[in-house]
Length: 284
Ligand SMILES: Cc1cc2nc3c(=O)[nH]c(=O)nc-3n(C[C@H](O)[C@H](O)[C@H](O)COP(=O)(O)OP(=O)(O)OC[C@H]3O[C@@H](n4cnc5c(N)ncnc54)[C@H](O)[C@@H]3O)c2cc1C
Image 1 (cartoon, rainbow, N blue to C red):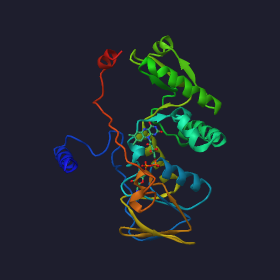
Image 2 (cartoon, helix red, strand yellow):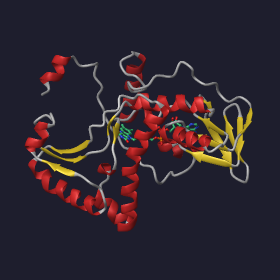
Image 3 (tube, protein in one colour):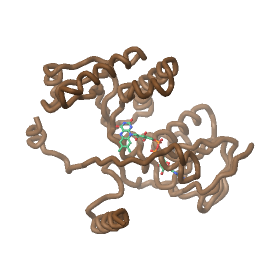
Image 4 (tube, helix red, strand yellow):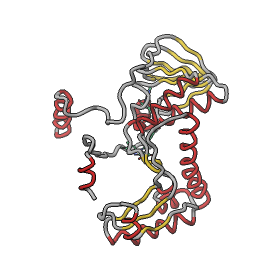
């Protein structure tokens, strides 16, 4: 009952213009690509135009493949256009949990993969000429209570064994980096930083279109048939190819796959109007 009430209340906020359905990073593009309304053929069909789908399409096109992307809304509509914008490597991993699941050797190669991804994205930004306000500040995992120091140091030690290079920052080193006093100490990974995810995903979209990727927006995959030739049925069209890449992220259960692997959880993020220099300074 309460869910229904909340849903109704949210709807009235949307209707009243209080909330947006999207975050502030992206808007529906002015050059929205037309819906697929006929039959098309390709070497590879990619479903979903987020970071994964667009990057896959770009890489495959560079290898000479004819690639079609089907996107139900517009490129960047999903998590790629709504995230926090941290470009981080292995510092994002919960090492102890992870180690228990995959074992030492595999954990090491996954840590390496995470760390290489930072250089990969930095390289792509340069090669594709994407300006997304990237600030290569490094990433800090910070502690806000003295009791967290032991756990942080232990996690750093496990990470170090797996090849994740980080440094401990004490109070003075945190202050020297301009971090507000509420953050007592931290673990710094020198590579990575922050970027505007909306500009990044829209840059990938632009690059994909320029590279000749055929992008159909407003085009939802409704069903597909497996076999040597895969047929993707959309609301008003059909695409066929010998290869299919599903880059549908958390939406994947909606096409009947990974239902028992994807677990919803709630994240709240607050977005303010731009802060003045004075307001920023008052934060310390
Ligand atoms: C609140 C939040 C904060 C985050 N912060 C960070 C961060 O700071 N750093 C970081 O690295 N990661 C962060 N992430 C994770 C990151 O955003 C995702 O891992 C990444 O964007 C996933 O990209 P993707 O291309 O796989 O999926 P998505 O960007 O979700 O793209 C999937 C696309 O598939 C389309 N689609 C789905 N079903 C269909 C269908 N049937 N037919 C056609 N199209 C379909 C969707 O419309 C969508 O555009 C965050 C995520 C969230 C939600």
